[in-house]
Amino acid sequence: MIVRKVWALAAAVLAAGGLVSTIGGPAAADISWTGQGVDVPDDCTGTGNTEVIHFILTSPSTTSSTLTIETTNTSQSVFASKPSGSIQWFIQAPAGDEVISASASNNTGNSQLTISGCENITTEETTTTTTTTTTTTLAPTVTPTVAPSATVEAAVAVQPRFTG
Image (cartoon, rainbow, N blue to C red; front, side, top):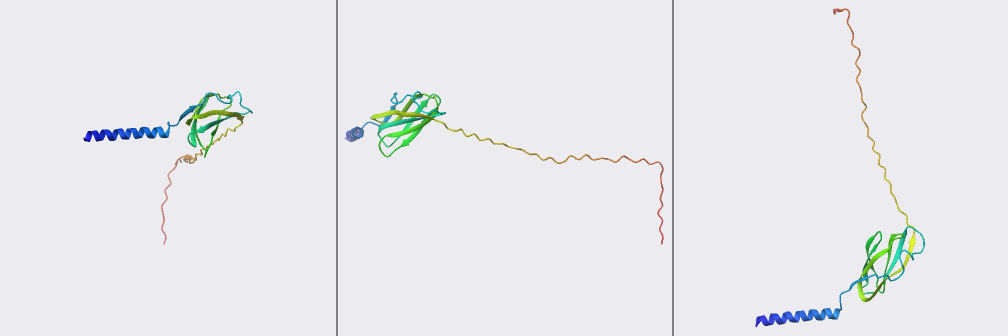
């Protein structure tokens, strides 16, 4: 009798879990970029040493997403959020880099991941030079000098005298 109740309870829990996952729909998955949008770097406008690549994720399942992108010379993951609507990223990479792959989290199945644009800009590299100067103060070196020794040629005898 107890065994039947335990099995009945387990079956009810499993059925409820299946019902909840059906109601909630499938878990949000990643969406991969498949070449939609402009061709990077061929369609980038402007000149400079950095390309700014504009990605858009339409119809995300939540108000935030993480974009993971790999270019010829870089790899990065960037989080973004927005109250509603599409989510956008502006990713910097070295000029001339090609987008090898990109993906974003929170795909609804109707989402699109697109490169909306690319612009080359000039960014300045900041170089900081630090100079360290070490000063060592040494005590002066003193070489003692010795007076030449005197030679005595004759002995002098002095006798004290007391007066008084």
